[in-house]
Image (tube, rainbow, N blue to C red; front, side, top):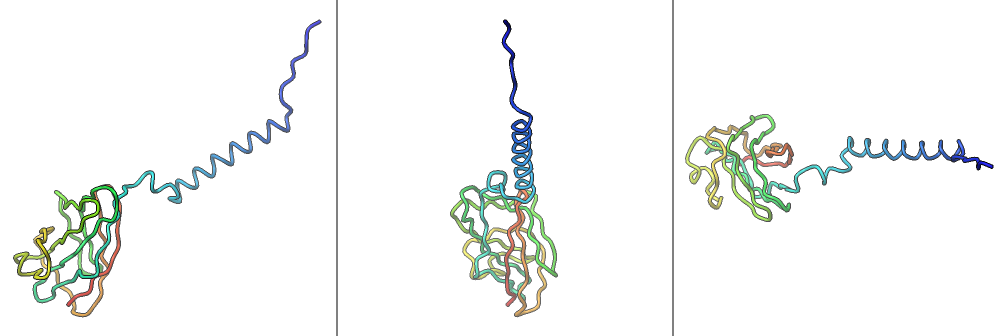
Length: 154
């Protein structure tokens, strides 16, 4: 006498299908909302340090940037709200755990950024700003990350 084979009940099959569908939906929403950003983005973490400034008499942005992340960051663009956007196709590297000075100026770097230690020229353009005004600054890296900060003109 042949034995009848039975599958799982329709109710249990429905519950399994719903559980898998909900798990996939949560993963998609998490990816879209950036919950898994750490796994897909660079682990560089750039911060504009408070001693950064805009030299209004020297028409220069003197930016002190610290990389608190674990990988080297390559800065390719800097934008200053209300002033302009500056690009550097070669990029400026900021090693993990290190800080550097970056200068955007149309004069000599040492003249424009007097307080900066060995500043790297990012762009040979003048920066025209109003004294005592705080400007928003965004740093863009080669991997597409954006790091915001503020700099005051003096």
